[in-house]
Length: 219
Image 1 (cartoon, rainbow, N blue to C red):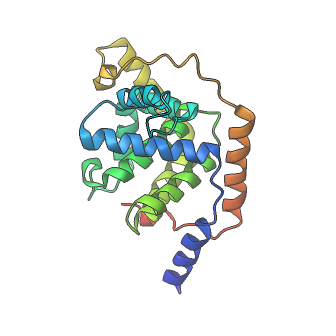
Image 2 (image 1 turned 30 degrees about the vertical axis):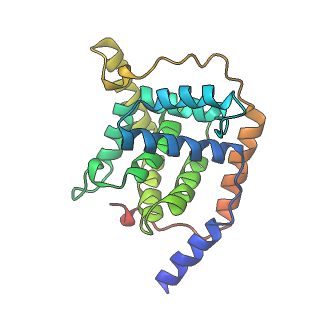
């Protein structure tokens, strides 16, 4: 019966809305995964694709402003994000051992939860679980839900620690993320009303579906 309920919950999640902010998160996951697989700078990939998309002869889809913001944010805070993920994995697992797509999904969600307070925590979690169900192995949605739910329930402490480490890093030597391309994001104009509505819809629809498994399913 428990397994049947899990499958029912997963099936219900497949009926999710795919609004503009969800699509931006999905594209960010794809770029981060590609960058890690190819061992290249994700911000450089974004800059390259933005230029290619300007030429209509190129079969390159434009990259949404919020996708660019996410990728830049993850690049800048990568060490803090990865440390947070690693701290919430079970003792049997290391960050390097989980699937690459799961790392990308978690990095997007953690950047939003820790460093973008305009995003509802539940919206970041819901879309991360949805993305995991699309791209990763069957067990991924449950353990990603469990890990992010634990962080969400202790968000003030986790966020404070991550932001303190960011300040300490700024005062000391630059870390690996400083090697990323310095992309000027001042030109980006985010439609806050649209993306906020997307997140509110995501949270509302999730509340009407069976909850994913609790944190004991985390790695």
